[in-house]
Image (cartoon, rainbow, N blue to C red; front, top):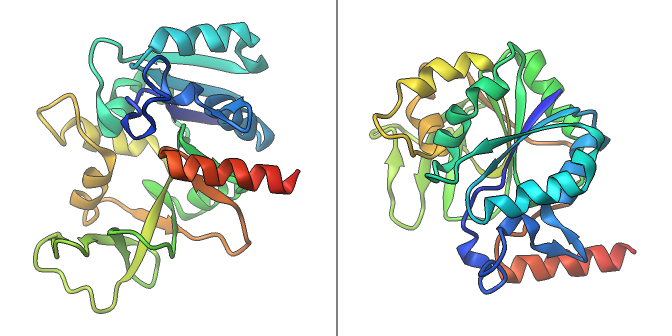
Length: 246
């Protein structure tokens, strides 16, 4: 199985830790984020990994090489000339990802012990174009799903903005996106024609295309740990949780 790790971000929410290193190499309880994500992917059977790089990208490349590519197939999607955001980053890596099989996408700043095979298998079984890890978690922006867990829209509860405009949210379930998703190659053509800009985010793409693509949500039934470690306060919470488990 193949996966892509988003490791190109500037990590502004983690300053000053990211003033001299990429976000993906910030340590969580003594272990870099990127290493934790790679080892978790390996644990659940992923053998081919694409990592995009931009901010201090050479440090990530050196780190991967110094660890003998973690004994799996690791390719680098180089965005050092231009940071392409999540949607643009996936499209830029198409040649490395598009082998006719679904692939998992994982933010480098998400730490979880979720069984990623279950998410992948659910995606394959549903024959969706994309399957997003979602949860009933407090946030300001929600993805909206119908009773079949099909994406129907998006809502910003702070501003009142709803997309697509005019949809009724009465029978839709608000869910927070967990930064991990599985994508089928069928989505690449839609990505290619989505924006005239190289740089764009994947979440607006999902929302804008939800009426013509089959985009599903996946809410695991079992308990699992999940941390967005892209902020200093949540990084500290994750480190404490790891210490407590030890």
